[in-house]
Image 1 (cartoon, helix red, strand yellow):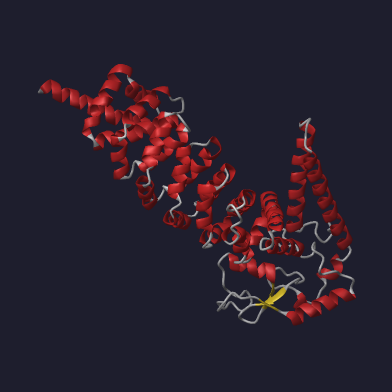
Image 2 (cartoon, rainbow, N blue to C red):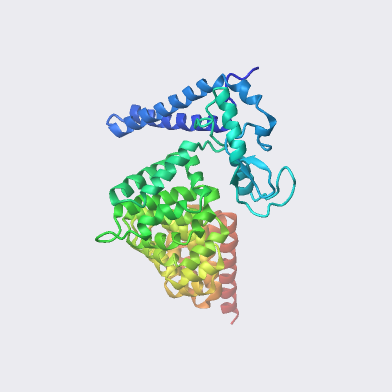
Length: 456
């Protein structure tokens, strides 16, 4: 079957249209389901519908040029995509490729020239103005508008107009406060709603520093403007969700100091989003070390100690991810993680999440020593009696197993617990497989102690 248009099978345009349709569906459902929906939601739906209409009109207006574009001279086609080049660039071997396609290859770590099979001596892409001019003239003779944003969409659904808009917003981040606030708010919304917009930040090493410049340079009267800080930090969180951005974001020098500052002095929403950004960035092992070395664990644990409901889940997730490494376990213990977690567990706050962190820390000798000294045994036994979650009981018994086998003075408490409540026997019979093993190990030790006493 013949294609009905240039873009009917273009994954970039299809992806962008699908994204717009999903957003429109979400907004319409919100309007229909909510009797008191805001005018802002209705305006957003109108804007999304307009964008979808504009995309469709561009597709239709360009569809009749399919034959001409497919029949373009071979020298005008990218050797990778086999399509008409929109932005021809020269690599170090002297070969010419379309920018988005050679960029995609380079971002994947492949530095081999597809045409010559030689290793590229550098990754600088130089515009091929001669070929670009010839392509423009060829298009002009046939009535093809090569500058149309729909023609410039790459494999991520990013267009030239998207890039121009991002540059314009980033430039505003160096303007006066009102322009900074306006730009930061729009960047926050765009990076939340449009995944492909997050990818744009990865194309330039200057984009993230420009985004953060108001926080690093512009100290306003009375300190950093809280609303601006919240929008910038939330944009940083949105960017860190994109896998290809994680390394770039974490290794940008000003990111860690500004995230730590946000953890310490931002609004509670800013602090929560800063913790969420650290959690997302810590998905990369190399970032775990970098974040730990930056000193971020102390403000995370301070925020955990404050116990604000809005921030607790993000903070606990960040601490857990970071403490996967032995070095970060040691750092967390040094800045009071064990004491803070036990205090929260005693108050039955976020028990499941904090028990998971405590179990993780229990592989560190200093943490185990602190647990014993700070009353972890009665606290964990009490949780085991009351808990409904099997995983929480499993984590409790696992930590108790380590504490008791490291500190013989704790066996008396375990014996009293078993005598009065049969808590450990119950877990050895009905717990998870791991919980059964740990509980059985404790029971064996208790029984040996009883037998030794009787023998004596």
